[in-house]
Amino acid sequence: MPICTQCGFRNVEGARFCGNCGAPVSAVTIPNPQVSANPTCKICDRGTLNSKSVFRMSGPVAAIGFILLVPSILGMLFSALMFLVVNSRAGSGSGTSGSESTHPVQSAFDANFRRSCAHSANQKNLEAGYHASEQLIEQYCECALSTFKETSSETMAAQTCLQRSRDGTLGQVGQDVDALYSSPTVTPSSDRTGTDLFRVVSSGFAISLGIASFVGGLLGWLLVMKKRVLQCDVCGAVVNAS
Image 1 (spheres, rainbow, N blue to C red):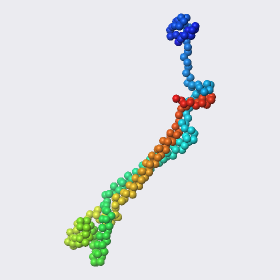
Image 2: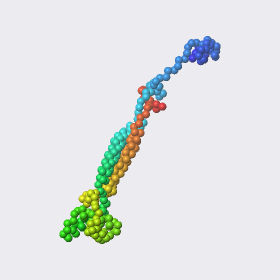
Image 3: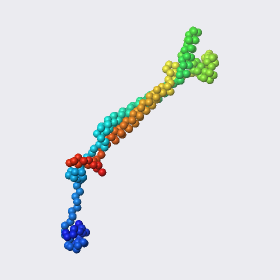
Image 4: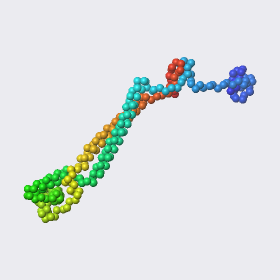
């Protein structure tokens, strides 16, 4: 921008004469101010301000943040691993029970009734000096069980099935029913109760641990966050970079 050497008036670009006093305009121009990459410190007016990263909080608070952050990360990893292991075992357990569901199952009442009936029939046959086959005893007990469920009378069930046994009209039993007399009682609901309870409690603990670890990790991360500041290389004054 041309300036007048007589009055110092700033003229527009290309002006040959001063717009204030009319004197010829000198070719001297005012250089544009150079902006330094590092601004000068306004406190000491000697040093330059250099950018650096510092913790937002004080040193002890940042140390507490690291103490919270490291265990929180480990806690989240452990909770995730525990959750996966518990549910994978529960899945394999349910798969096993699914494969075992092909075998006959019976309630505790039915198992006790069959066991008591078979034992009583064997005892009566031994006392009478008569040997009955296991298949015949199972046919009799199945008849007694179904009749008892219909009439709720053990006497009626015994008389009815004894008469059928004499008449040879007892129903045939299959291999699945035969397995009920030779295998232990299977109660799916009670078997699953303990497994399901363990899975629910363990999963809940894993989720709670994960949430607590996440909250602790978030708090620790906030305490160790850094910010950009400008620090004077002469007097050490620190100002915000913004």
